[in-house]
Length: 241
Picture 1 (cartoon, rainbow, N blue to C red):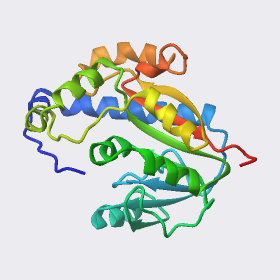
Picture 2 (cartoon, helix red, strand yellow):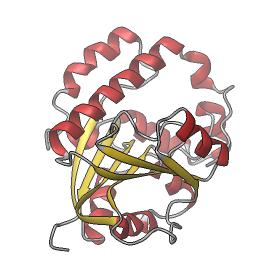
Picture 3 (cartoon, rainbow, N blue to C red):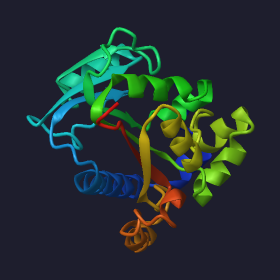
């Protein structure tokens, strides 16, 4: 993950209130979607690239045992002490060979794959998730979408790493194509579905964000889902595999 420069154009134009409002909406929508569509009531969860927020709001204790992994030892420590992970260790997506096959019910990539995509193709991360999942388990990914207007604009800015840093602080925020997420899932034998977590953007004024929330309610529509600003991929491993 590349360093983040907070003194960038978009941060200077954004208020903390708008960021907090959008983040709360994302968390609400993530929970709603998983409650409605995941169909897994408990088990072992691996949160890859967990940062300091490993996903406990999505997979509450004691129903779920949550294991975090991150390249940053400090984030690993904080994910347990503050973020609610049951345990955590230092590691990198696509390089978790120490973990046994079929040892998790959910592999979670929450705002992780779009950083991985800056460094390498996503193939190894998807192959690893498929290996680690038990039959009937699911890969869950929440990532910025390429087909949303903000994602499309971001991909253009990212063509110049120096411009990306000046505009939004880092060159490694790579919006992901919903078509690519589906394709990678199918390639490794998983059965994918795409949902829009939200169509809002954290830089939007608060009143506009609330107005767009009405569209979020249709985020599982086949026609609208690929155009979300945040996408949720749920890719299941067939029970017979």
